[in-house]
Length: 375
Image 1 (cartoon, rainbow, N blue to C red):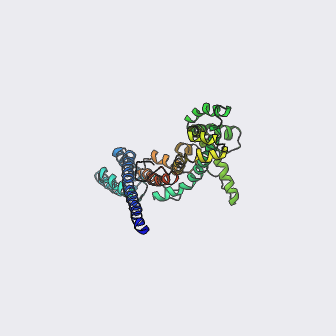
Image 2 (cartoon, rainbow, N blue to C red):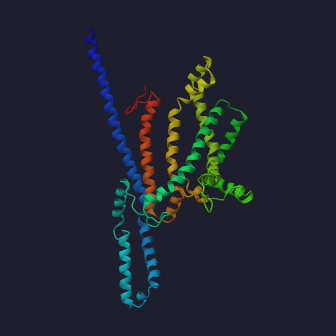
């Protein structure tokens, strides 16, 4: 009799498990498809904007003619040719140069081919830029600058993230105190970008006090000893890292403090206080735990944001990172480098968004994958 009762229960549980699995698979497939479509649209828009809708082709064709005119002007064999032969030879050289760069094909066809190659992470060759080793391969150009950006942005963002959360937790329990009012008043200072603070830091510590270098990542000549090399890099990193941290610090503290205060005023927190639970237990279990999805989201987006670097700040400090690379690529209209950095960031962002949905379900039991209902 007992076995007969258990059999339907087992079937019901198995059916629920199968339905949940199908729901997760369906949700994952649709989610990946939607994210992929978003990435494709974003990358194609980047291609169109970087090429100014095809206007960059006209600029490049003009540069080809100008460069060839200067080169052939110094060629004695060319100068000895008759005018008609000169014109024919010049036009033939222009056509060959345009073919090498693919400019002989319509821009729309090239843009779609560029999109297909980018989606497959076939980044190809840069049009204008080269790596420090002389290579025009976009992948090598990016990889050469990536460690510098990860070092600067990694240290700055990790220090900024953990210090602002720790301080915000303290301020959320001391509403109306001097420091609480101080950070509320100081939060508008974050409206000024990091490079703005960077200029002042350079003027004070490099130009006036002369205790820190103006910029760069390493002194000249670079130290031969590994230990001295590391110390020199860290010294060069003080000013750009400080600019990044100082710029965002007040607003981050204020944002997190307000966020924690909202959760700290919930009824279940007041109930926990009434039960006499310790402040540490209330903070960890009743304030931090419900805010984990937001903290994890912020941390994840911060990690992938390291990829893009800080365009103007790295340029101000002559820091050889991805940000400065993108800045130079935009100035030189090098579409291959711009799109190369964009597609990698787009993929990182898409996969982060996808996996965050599953992380939310793990840290918050109310979240159900593939369902809009919350239990």
